[in-house]
Image 1 (cartoon, rainbow, N blue to C red):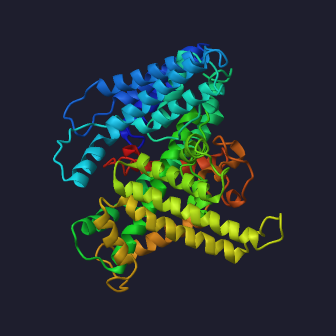
Image 2 (image 1 turned 90 degrees about the vertical axis):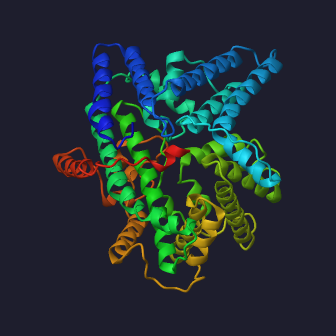
Image 3 (image 1 turned 45 degrees about the vertical axis):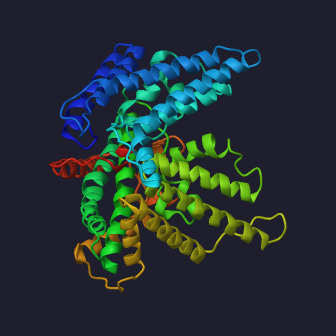
Length: 508
C-alpha cells in the first residue's frame, strides 16, 4: 500500500488516525499504540509480491517471527549480568546475528551468489526463485543495532508492545529512515503519546503533501525519461552525448526527488501521530565533498554503516591506510545492501574510492597550513567548485546504480564522455526536457528542503534549528495562505495518481 495511492490517502491513513485519536481521547494510551501496531501489520500484509498471482500470509509471518526472535534474544542478553555471563551473552548475540543476516542472505542474495558461482566456474547450478520479503533489509539493520547495543549495555528493557511498534511502525517500515531504538522507544513512554494535536497534524500533513507532490509531479515525471535511455543502452544501441546525459541526469533527479519524497512523507505521517522520526535527507546535491554527501544522503544508513561496520573494524584509529581499507569495505557492504548485483557492489566501491581521495585531499591541505591548525575554509569559488565536482562524481556513480549490467553502464559512460562525439541533441527528449532538468538542477542547489522550510517546528529528529539561512527563503506557517496553497498542491498531485509508481528504495 504505497503512500502515493488512493487506498492509503483516503482509507488507511484516515482510519489509522481516527482510531489513534479516539483511543487517546478515551485515555487508553497503550491501546492507541497497540492500534498503530495492528495498522502496521495490516499495512505490511497488504503487499502482494508481483511474482505471485495471489496473496499469501507467509511474508507477514516471517516479519512477526523476526520481531519475536530478536525481542526474545535482546531480552535474554539484557537479563544476564555482563560480568558473570559474558560467554552466554556472546552466544545469544551470535545467534541473533546468524538469524538476522542468515535470513537476509537467503532471501536477498541466494540468486546473486549462485549466479556468480555459475559465471565464475562455468557451472549450471539451478537458481531457485526466492522472493525477498518487503522491507527486510531495513528492519534487519534496525534489529541488529538493538542486539549489539543490548550486548554493550546501551539498550534498555522494553515491553513487547513498544519493541513491536519500534520495528513495525508503518511510516518507516518499507524504506526507512533506519530508526535507532534510542530515538523511537523513549517517545513511546511519553505522556504525550496517544494524543492527536492540531499542530502535529498541520506540520505532518504539510510534509506529506510536499512529499506527495515531489513523488507524483517531479520524480515520476522525470523518471519517464530514464527507462528509454538505459533500455537503449541495455539493448546495445549507440547513444549520443545528449542521450546519455539526458538519461544520467534524469535518473539523478528521479532518485533524489523520489527518495526525498518518501522521507518527507514518512516523517510527516509519523508527526501526525505525535512521533518524530530522524532526518534522513538533507539536500545532498548541495554537498561540496563526497564526505559531506554521505552526511546528507540516506543519513540513517550512513550512521548505521559508521556505527556498526566502520567503527567496529577500527575506523580511522589505525592510520591512513587502514582507514582507507575500512572505508572501502564499508562502502562495498553498503553497495551490496542496496542490491544483489555486481553493479551495486561496484557503485559502493566507487564511492569508497571517492571517500579515500576526499580524505587524502583534506590531509594534503592540512599539511600545507601551520602545524596543528585546521586548513582555512574554502572560498566561495572553491565551495562552488566542490559542489560541481561532487555532483559530477555522484552522477557518474549513479550510472552503475541504475544500469542492469556493466556493459550497459560502460556504454552509457562512453557516450557521456564523448565516445561518439558531443552532439547535444537527443532522441529521447527535446527542449522541454532540457529546460526541466535545468530547473531541477537550480532547485536542488538553491531552494531550501522541507526540514528547512519547517525549521521553527522541529520537523524531524537530528535537524539543528537555524543551521542554515536557506529556510528563510520559504518559511512554512500554520495559516490560511499556506493551507490554501498546499490544498491546491494536494489536489494537483492526487489528480495525477492514475498510475501509481513504487518508490525506488522499496526494492532494497
